[in-house]
Image 1 (cartoon, rainbow, N blue to C red):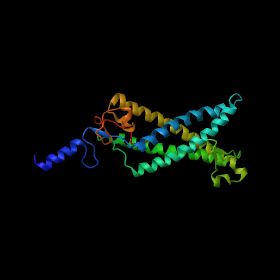
Image 2: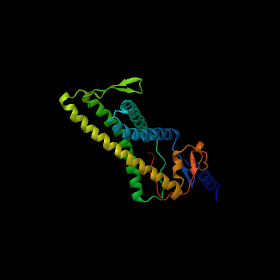
Image 3: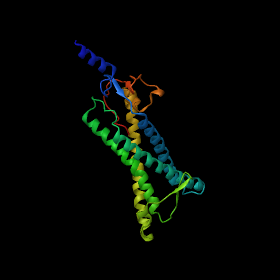
Image 4: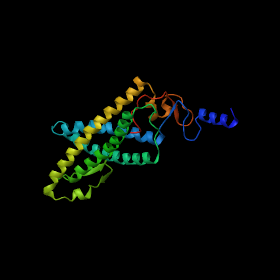
Length: 238
């Protein structure tokens, strides 16, 4: 083997050839992507749970006050998810995520990418339809972001004629409910895929979204973790 060939081989073995990790390792997402992922994930689970509870609780007298306060927190957290999701989408477009495993089948790749973008549609669409519903509501209830300041209504919707507001509000309410059901389905699908990779395929793919400080396979010093080639993937960064 020539000196140049040997040097090239060493670079590949050490995972230092360009931006490509060594053979047998799967790179982790960067820390910004991880932070946004988990912040949004926790917020979405809280939103889905609170949304299912409050729409029923507010109908009875026993929990009406608590349900009203929950509505305010739900709106505040929803707008926070909207901002974080827009930041996350921008970060995703500016920072290429780790590639899907080479051994994934074509239909698995299509499903992964479809789920990936469906999540973005939900994360941005659900808060927007909720904000639009509140803005068009004839009740004219304010949104106080975690009790700190008032978030203005969407001006064109707020300015709708009073006689038409109820119908517009109903339309956005239905859209918001559909978005919630879509989000619940996507969450179940995503968690099931992650568990499948971790405990059935055992391809270590789930560690890509977990900081190395929490464990997992040893990295190669460049944000990568040792992992066997995956048979199926749960998709890119959600």
